[in-house]
Length: 131
Image (cartoon, rainbow, N blue to C red; front, top):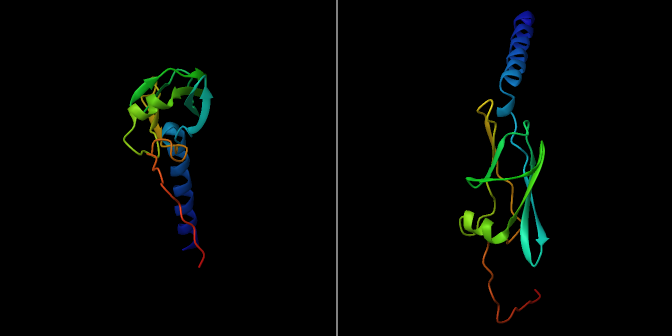
């Protein structure tokens, strides 16, 4: 009985290792991140990530973008552009990396800075009470 369990564990481990070798692009998203930065008089969203192949195409919310860097890449987009490419009050963006050689596409959904695409509520007064 113990020999059967040991063989089953070895088979499962071998299958997982084979999957990792044959499908490395499917294992992890590009780990994109976002940060609000200043770009002249406006504000920009700095999106950065990592890709296996420097020739892979990067797109944000379905729009192809030209990035700086090779495997470690970054792109700066005006907040107005991000607003145009995103649904109202979005809290994330979709970042896709498409490897032309293998045909693999990885996608991640990094969060946006809090309130970036939300609307602002003007308060006439704010009352803070104690209990």
